[in-house]
Image 1 (cartoon, rainbow, N blue to C red):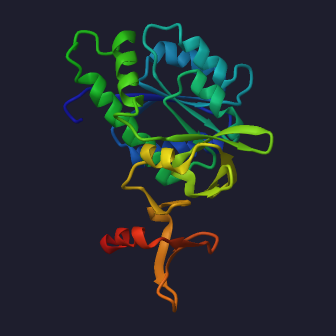
Image 2: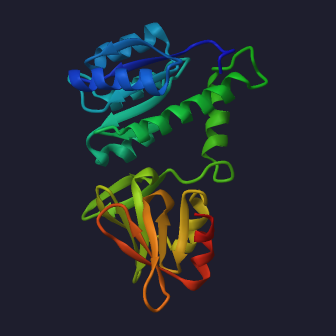
Length: 264
């Protein structure tokens, strides 16, 4: 994307250390990104976005005065809507965030791996926008809506979030955080680095929506994230199991799925 104009961004968060850390991390993960303003509250963030007209805004949800959701709602009425990346320590805001057309959603503490994925999505999206046939107005609302629909279409994109329950709460679980999924009775348990969630979607439907390079169905009742696998072993009876890199989890591999591991 070196032949295109610089990509600009605004950071808004009321935590000084987070602002500093995110600014530094973005400079390493996304050198082409030009941070044009860093703000500590929602009102200042809204003014900066209106004045600077950035491509992207990294927006904390909980901020004094005007929260991030309110800032996003105010931006929906502008003629150039930036890509909104919500940042929060509370995943219960995820559904509300996506109601406000969030492009992505980062949970604190933000890991380098997760930030890199977000940066790559930003690059890909803006490249698509800027190379649209309608070059006279690449940031028109119509062009953006057209591309959002294309990117979010199941035919063009794999699942990024899983709507799941934890107790009485409904959460949006980032697929990047999932280690494995296991069918149990009428539910499917979603095991992540942050805990366990429940969904009702059958595994046979989920596997169609997950990137096959990242997730393998190793058993009729189990889907595992490939990079969560530490090693594969056989027991004395010849049965194969995978051991995950976190929690000492051991999962059975069906005979039909053993061929998947020939490429590892």
